Length: 68
Image 1 (cartoon, rainbow, N blue to C red):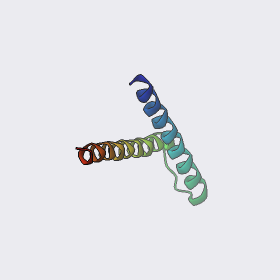
Image 2: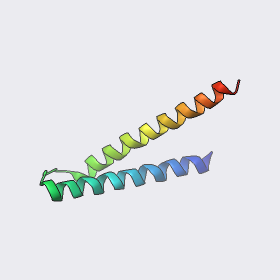
Image 3: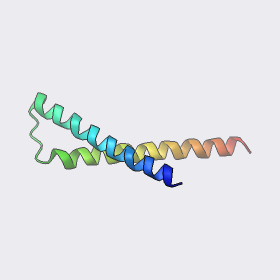
């Protein structure tokens, strides 16, 4: 259980960093002018992380219901 929690936290960090990098690239290319790219990138990473958790939970529930 602790291993899974650690992996989920590492995934959250990775998605936040990726979100920040993508926003920084968009900011450089399109001159968007975000005031706080780091916080916006964290929000994008958090939303992606929550989406992945919901998707995983759905598949776990679906597999349990079909095995009965």
